[in-house]
Image (cartoon, rainbow, N blue to C red; front, side, top):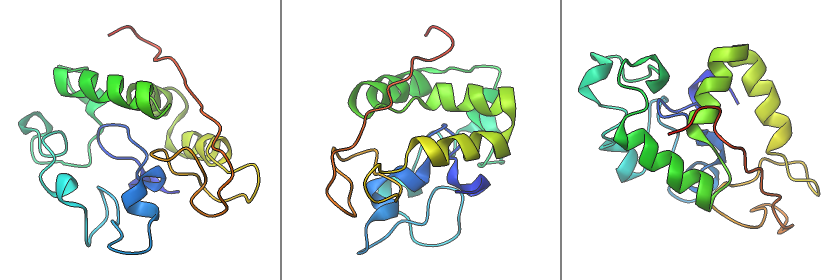
Length: 141
């Protein structure tokens, strides 16, 4: 993982099915290259509040958390065990480098050591069940 691994909304692109699959692989929100369609037209990444800086984390916005981010948080926390808001708050608290190091450890498959996919219940590499890392957001929505 690196800085480009964190989407403006706080989702970790490296954990996405589109990023991990072999065919039609997405390069992630902040990288140049092929992306899945919903990333190309993302209303969060291209939000006018970002003033043309699409990589800026949404937590820097005066309207944070907006409805789009709250909806994304609800979906990701409920379905996938990832907290985009919690991710951004952690980055703000400890810095990007430490955050990335923490996430590298949390999202590793216990069986094979590869990064797990947040969208699947089993590791895409070895088929081992994925441990859910449900974290409550630090702030209330």
